[in-house]
Amino acid sequence: MNKTLLILIDGLRSDAIARTATPVLDDLMETGMVCLSGQTVEPSLTLPAHFSIFSSLPPYSHGVMTNTATPDMSGAAQSLFAQIKAQGGTTAAFYSWDHLRNLAFPGQVDYTLVQRVDSPKDQKLLGNAAARHLITHRPDFTFVYLEWADLMGHAHGWMSDAYLSAVTQCDQAIQKMAEAVHTLNKKGFGFHIVVVSDHGGQEKHHLSNHLDNLTIPFIAHGNMIRSGGHLDGSLSVLDIAPTISRIMDISPHPGWQEPCCKISSGLARKDFPCSTLDNILPGSVSPRQPKQNPLFRPWPYPYKTNTLSIVSPKSNNIRAKN
Image (cartoon, rainbow, N blue to C red; front, side, top):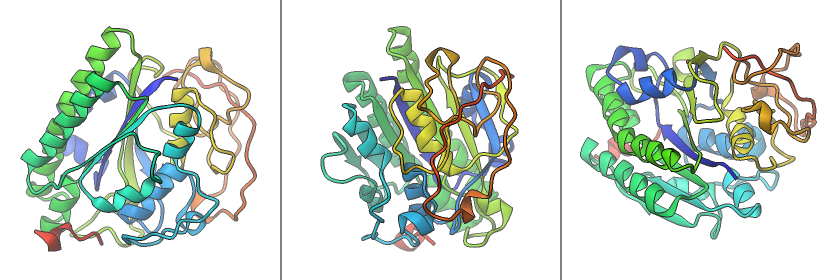
């Protein structure tokens, strides 16, 4: 099982990366793959988007439509945490927003650290704790949630100076984790990093279907990832769980709606549907079939079994989610 670190930067707009200093993200993009035109779900709220990321289902299918402390998740939804545990993997989670505990049932996360973030220092401490855990325990899957950019977006406005500064501070919080992964990979542990966001934002909210709210970045880095390429095709947050299962070389859940990308031709397997992300791996290109908007698919959606070869080509009121 290949090890993976999933870092989610809440409220990160793709265009913010180029507008402020993000040396760690820049390095991951230069040595991995990047898509700056990914799309989140509607409603573009934190908890519904997280459930879509982890279950590969749109909100109307997994049943979580608001930022509620007691979400009523559909029985059709299977979390990535559950899928990894079912196949013998170890898991860890680090976050500051307590509602995210609902992404996994008891027993599906081996180690959890919940730490309130009221300053960039708090967020950096959370990232450093995750880095230490990576070094000492080397879990198969680690989820880290960074909240500061979203808090500053709601307080001061997206793309404001305070927001852009918060994006830089998120980048700084990632530094120790990236260094830990680099150290472990030098020892042959084969860690991968995936960085994604749940939504963007405009003015002081992300409630509408404006592209600034819906467009998100996707970054993948690791020895299975083609270096220095940009993904120009469509990408949805529904792709994340199947793609991580492909990176980890585990079976995806049959209920997951999205196909995954092939990450390495050496690990190609017929039981993996891989057609969403282009330009990640070596091989020849097979034609892609046009697909419906994933936000408006009927349920159940037929599980795809075809694979494609891909060519190679980079204060409390503030905390309230809305």
